[in-house]
Image 1: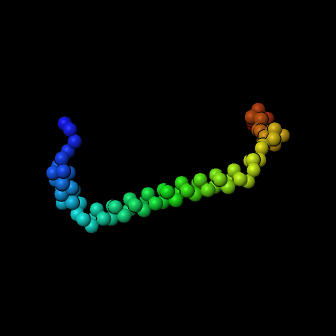
Image 2: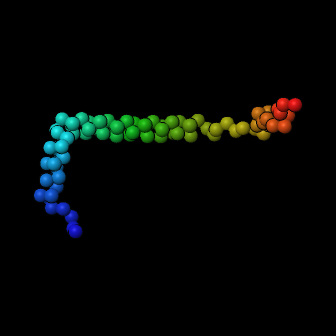
Image 3: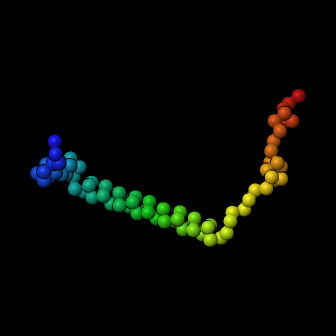
Length: 80
């Protein structure tokens, strides 16, 4: 029940290559690498945007008067 030996891993690798072929495995590897790179760029962009917002000062606050102007009274809007 311990870890697999090198021979077990070589047999698994051989079966995977026989099933998928080397060209398809190469394409899967490059697609996976591109996805990881895109994810890293996205996370880096999100961190940069957060840093810019933090450096720009505090966010604008919503006042109570503005929120009341957007409030809709349901009873006033009902049909008679």
